[in-house]
Image 1 (cartoon, rainbow over the protein chains, first blue to last red):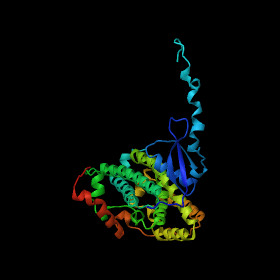
Image 2: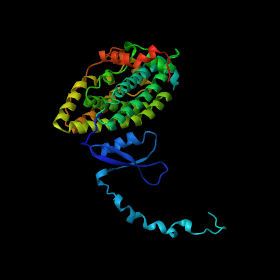
Image 3: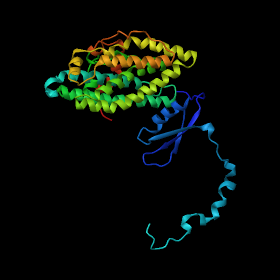
Image 4: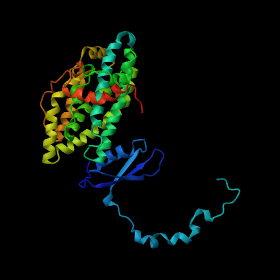
Length: 95
Length: 258
């Protein structure tokens, strides 16, 4: 086996039997979308993990810049009132 | 209407189950030879999956054959302790892997046959055969899709891939007629609605495979191939080599487990 640089990389998302949303499970190489779905089926659903597959060309995914982590994700850190745990739940409330 | 047991000879069922089981076992072994040698990691796993599907079908069919035979032979004894003349698989499935195109042409020809066969067998008056076929038809359908996509991709691909895919079709075409030859046992079981009519299957196989080959810009002869003998135990030289490797461990260390 050789690593083939001709075939683009694809990201694979699966929706499980009881899952509501597709979740990222990994990536693979394939020449086109059909092959990517077949390969995803063979690589990631061998133990009945999913009932729906999405594949997306990895090159089509735009990611946030790791260097921006501070400005992007730190500001909410001191805004605890955004978490539901900030509020006290009345004792007689039936959940 | 008489009961099935009254009109169906168990020996006929044994013969048919053995033949179909051997098809699955031998092709499974051939596909497993690609493990760690496939052109891509992804395809490596895909072919191992096909091999495992077929191995599961082989186990069910050989176990059924052993039970019906009533001589106490189980799946392992049938798989590992028969000689090549006692195997009744089609010549197509024992053909060497060749290049990737040959493996995919073999899979296309066999899986198309198997899908049509299992669809028919799923309606069988034999509950055991119907059950095995109903489970297997989903697996075979996927195998056919996989082989079809590769046939189209290679046949209608680059100049090199087209030449190789055409050579693969030419090489294996002589073995395309054998699956549809009706032996005496099959004919009797067909009358009892245990197995489907092979002539009808043959027509549909021709239509489906020819349509795929046409779309892939591949040519094939008008007539199906005439090579035969596998069902009677008359095999090509390739089967002996395959069995020597496949059976070596069991024969050297009987009933070894790990």
